Amino acid sequence: MVELALGDVPKWLDSKLESAMKPLRKEWKSLLKDAEKALRDVRNACEKMKKEGEKCLSDKDHRKHGPGKAALRFYRMMTSILDDVELPSDISVSSMTAFQKDLARIYNAIGREWLGLLSKMDPYMIMARRKLRGAWRKIGSIVRDIDALVAKCRPLELKDEVSSAISKIEKLSSDLRALEGEVGALSIEKGKLEEELSELLKAKEELEKSEAISKLEEARRELENLRIEVRTELRHAWKALVKLRAQSGLVALSQEEREALEAYLSDPLSALAGEGEGYPVLKSLLAKVGEAVERGILALKPSKAEKLRKWLEGALSGSLARLQLKCKKALSDLESVRSSGEVVEALRELEELSARISELEKKVGLLEARMNSLKARQKSLRKKLEEELEALSGLLEEISGEEVRVVLKG
Image (tube, rainbow, N blue to C red; front, top):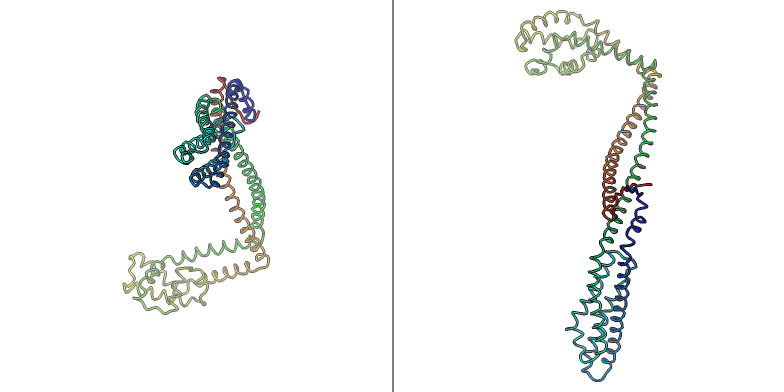
């Protein structure tokens, strides 16, 4: 097996095609020489027609003016077409077919005018038209010869295919390198962000374990435990209070009582702590709850109604006073801790850390998404690159008859 680096393929291919290309290059060179002469003859004939046409137009014999005008029109038309023709510098199927098109355009343009402008030049400019006819026929012959030569140029076609395949592989390889560079840069950026994020998380953890925050959390825990205690204490009256809110139209409540009802159902601890000593508004509400239950306005199961009655006896006589004091103290203690200088400063730092951590986590997430997208593109490009290298290897095997493996680098 022959293993070739991609950059060595053109030179290796040229060496393999040299024997096949030698006679083709010779034939192509001969055709180009003939074509150059034929094109020169066409241009010379046109120049001669121009000169003779100008003489006809300056002649006093008006019968010569028509042929003169036809000659000048033909000259301008053909000069425009001839000026667009370029002799190819290399031998390739594409350059041969492009040149053949140019020659065919000239051949067809002249052919159309034998019964057009050229026929209007009769009986003048005979020699120029004769010279043009000879060059015209030669161009037609060259067009047919190029067809025959192209048919022999399978090696050239393959060479063009190889060049195209190499260009495609080089583009894929370049795109892949660019992607790898971008992924590498993003990986470095992500690493820096993660390092900073790790440091911030550590700082946040240490701050959360600080004495100031620990005191605050302890006060909050005590308050939450007490919140559960208050809710538990009110459990027997809870359903009745909910029903009272739903059926407030059946029980006369003052504005203060309605607001208190909403407060107790929303946050019973704060509501109890916010009342005056002896919780007078809650007692008023509870008295109306008891009355409504007794009258059947608020329907409860007998067992629940009985538990409510027993509980109301104590609540209405002040059994919640101690709990109210505990609530007031817990809220006061929490506010005292929260407003202390060290806690205020710790909370400010914690807020700043949390904001920066959130910002960094978002950036890391966006980078990961971008990297995943690029890596998927990398995978697709690598697969395509492998397929193109295999296809190029197969093409070179077809040309050389040898087993070939193309790799990006030697």
